[in-house]
Length: 554
Image (tube, rainbow, N blue to C red; front, top):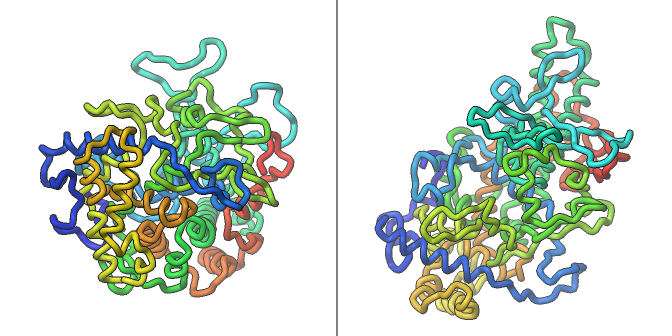
């Protein structure tokens, strides 16, 4: 598929995942058997995991006190920034044009910026009342159930608008509210649910604040220079936000989710990548492609981190099902979001000692809300609803490396990356551990003995990554194999996505270089050293003047 490739290299037929001995890529006639097997495995994964207790502060046995739940949705945002396909592979039923990856330059915030003010004008707002250039991202007013207070910025939601409907279907509430059916964002998936749209609004607020900072320092370009000044301003702000984003991914997100031994290998200035498809020197900056073993395998682990409910702010606790349905597609008559959906970010990241919603531990079990039949309806003869079945089936149809072959290939190239894991180095032990787990909940999926032997000997990759995390880290981080695939892809994409800070350089040094590409002076010197989501939120709070916002922003 254009935009996709395989991790390390294209596996030989003998190295590909098989179901009941058949290669789904080479045997479409066996797809019905594959769907049945993935259906039963997904039912086995409905069983809750009996996690061991932790000494660290946590209120529920399944919570991960080391990963606040905001990182769950930062992972989703990163996924949108890496992969954009017209149709999921599971629904498409096989590799084809609809599953092409449109992302060609990774982690450059295309999911936020689209094609820029010229290519995607609908997502941009006028820069100022006396300047008709578009360099700020459009935001929308939140809705109030009660009287609107005087304090705080009202522009806390993404922008939304109604649209003419030639079919004659009107989803408005007659005489009360017009249905805002269209989300004015670069990537419609960024309005998949309320938390995702709020994270998008957070980053838009940060971009707009950076525009204001640059405007204060750029001087008066005069009437003939306004057009060029606007483009410089936009490009400088975008590059600054990309630099901040990359710093947070490297130093915060990856540090939390990757196994410490693997993070230490890849976080240095010159990681020794084993997945270099086009060059022995560095990754290409054009024609980038994402490994299927990442997009349809290892990176699906984020779905296991989704909580069953969220404390959105001090006053509002919302069930996951309701949260998933809060979008312009699913609930247009109740848009924009009201005050009960305005995220208080200290509930999603640890800020000044706050106790946030923690993510779920990583393991082969998903929150019940991800089985929502309105959001993830059935699409084949199994009648299985939910996200988990889609993940498993999509992996089975992608022609990916089998777990055994992938471990063997990594072991041949970098044995030190997996040598500490008996689960990876001892195949008999691995099969026994998988078989034991499958048998322990056999009744859930009505797994047959044949199913169990097939899955124990050749598990689908997204399932094994979750199983490994449960076995190796008690679900607190990814295991070694998952960490290698995610690290190779994310750190590799950061390298492919543009200029990187020199070894040991600070964010301030990087921003200084960015500024001098566009201006004679450093117009970005007000930006502090932001290396975590907590710091990003705090800086956004200051530059957007949201310290006293109602409802609370921080």
